[in-house]
Length: 316
Ligand code: GFB
Image (cartoon, rainbow, N blue to C red):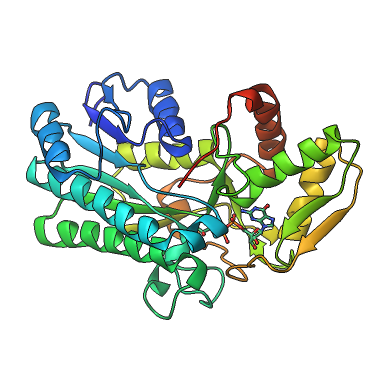
């Protein structure tokens, strides 16, 4: 790989893909390609094959996926399973057939069993049953990890999977029905503050623990995988520390400056009790997270305040 190598970033308009685009551009990569979903429907196998035959990228970063928070995953199981399988199968197979030698597949920590020992090591994959609220998405992502592992094993190509913990940052989805917890809480506390410090209702019990990684740290992990041959097919990406949803809520409430009450809606699911990543493998290879949660929340809140008028509802 060199700075003129043609690198296709699938999903370059999303939170992760756009962060990867920024990181690679800042590092001097000057031959990046991306297509919006209107220009190229990644669920369409023929269209994806035609795109690869014309463009012949040297490397592919798969940041394209149907993603969402706990309720979206629970309410749209078919889309989370089928669309993710379609997107990744089309990309992986077209890349394989068109002599792409480096493919970076992105997934999520929910691929690991619901009650796996903590922190989660890569070797715990497929050792027990999954968390039911997101097993559809997880099964699709596990299939992608396995497809990349198979190509690596059978054809000796540099196909790797990076599994980040819960990501957040600029260009996140702030739609209250479909978003993940961190952007949802930023919006809820901000709007409640503007509304005379009205009470805020959050989901579940507040007791589950989550780990949060700023998307710019994730993008540096992808850059690291572009520039190095990683020792194995699967690597966790995270900070190595987590906190309860209740503590996260208090931290966001303080950053936003909301002074009202917090209520917990126990009719909404908690999801998995804990999913802290063991990040020793990627650390040993040379990557480490740099952005603290405190700074990340402040920066994301500032970004939200600047851009909130541009948000659309995200329909699934
Ligand atoms: O981020 P989140 O939607 O998904 O929720 P997961 C994390 C926790 O925050 C859950 C609680 O315990 C939620 O009940 N929570 C509290 C809220 N208030 C809210 C709120 O207003 N909005 C949201 N969204 N949550 C997803 C998976 O799991 O994480 C995906 O479904 C993927 O497949 C992704 O793995 C990273 O962390 O539970």
